[in-house]
Image (cartoon, rainbow, N blue to C red; front, side):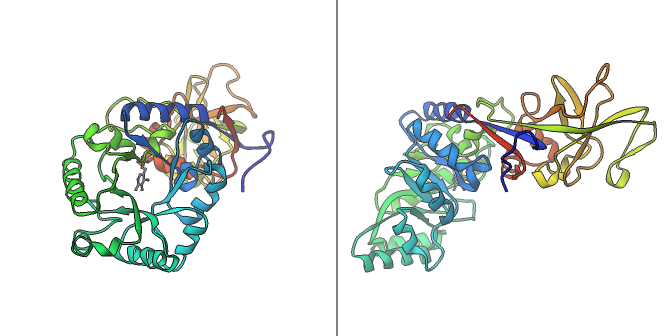
Length: 369
Ligand SMILES: *Cc1c(COP(=O)(O)O)cnc(C)c1O
């Protein structure tokens, strides 16, 4: 369910498409001559692939990655006809024909996927485009060492594949000194040498910041486009993309010792003013943010006190001078003072999860594009 009424919405989500475009240009600059795709899986990390993809296409992006076939089919009308749409999970058995019908390119991850794709190519009597993924140390998707041996010893197995890229995925790229980065790079170079010559795709957002050795022919950033910091422990060079504002429903004065919220998990240390705000865990404001996160009223920090309810949170507004805050006022839950990564840290998670959790009840506004 997407909320379409501004006046009645409990919270407002603003997505800055121009900031996403600026982030894309920044990544491209960082990449030098390497092409830059956009990963728009999970509805562009919750921000709306139907709006994000056309904005990036306007900046020259011609390669888009989704996770699922259905996401790719839904994306097709929103990208130029000449754009390529790739599906990271490859094809579930039996629906390979849908990829051809919708002109979507699978990332084939296993011998089974390779064989099913080449079988279809034989039936159709023409080569079919695919990306071959190899596992270089993450143990998640892609050909294992043993599967790579099988293919290397029997290269005919790839007959029928128009090999667009050989690809792999980094497990620890946001930690620049992690030993797995260089190991995966070496494994990737070795794997490429055993496969037919083809362009290569290796880096996600954080990989782009590991330097030129990691760039190859096509980078696949997602999170960085949406403003998530790519390098652990370093300032974020990207533009922030998301603002989340929620409405105050009610304000009350409570006495010292009064409890707030389910389980009575916050107790007023003195007389306090509590503002109840219209967002909760059903909107993706994670329950782990209870007693942890801060909202902002202008520049003033208002701590979330008590647990997060399904539809509401409670803020300690005692510190605000004068009449403080009134019903109808908007507070920032994600914004200038509390960017996605700060909210994620308070929740004990990563910015990716904050973005992909953003709910359907928010009234969404897109800036620029
Ligand atoms: C999600 C994903 C990406 C994008 O990763 P970010 O860290 O968001 O840049 C790239 N490649 C693969 C295989 C992925 O699963």
